[in-house]
Length: 358
Picture (cartoon, rainbow, N blue to C red):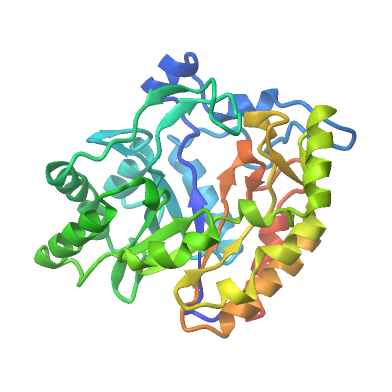
């Protein structure tokens, strides 16, 4: 494999109990509860999904994390982007990455993706009606930014932390919700240089709507990633009508994976040097949101292979050879690479095979 290509997989550290989940959802709640209670919503809907060789794991167990890394390496993945949660000094789910830092294991590259959004008990209505705030994302000025930096800099200094152009990679999920993000990044760039860690932070923005791409980059981000949800369907008049019909008969919006993969890599957008493309193995959010979501129907590892080929072939031609993989273990979004009962490790094998051809 071309050593310059870096496939970085989003990693959800939610699969262990923690106090806030106990309070909000009941003692011992983890994402496995949503996964296990899911029901098929239409004929041929493969729910619930069932984990394969890793089982219903608990991420507090170091051996589980080592097994994940073994599989990720077999898939040709460079490292994990751990979802990171910071609410004015209050953190969620940081126990796992704290242990990874303190123990020095697994010996596998990692970085942070700041999921900077308010946590809600969602009703999944388009307009947000009925949602209840559980913990609010706020931005509280330089003192908060410094405290946040002082926590993260310990990880930046770790030799496993992912760097691009010798700068630590830091992903921000909702950049346009953060009105002071330009100041935040300028301060972090100043502090990371003063600490002798790097010349700057390699800030990467998630962009929900492609029309916001250039403006988002102008705020000072090194690169951007396009959120692929809006590429799932062509949103033609026929698609919109079909969506309304599906809602009326109480099933999710269905888009075949075979059709969707034709739109997941955009030569116009993803070949830009300031854009990092994304590989998407599958998507089915129904364990969390029921019928109020889009399902990429009939994903298979061989269709995934064609998608992987198109992204890898495109990135080979670029100077910027980073790729995001969405995701390693978002089981309740039906968005995962880990082995499952029905497909085994076929997605891992396919990605690994294609990477080794480079």
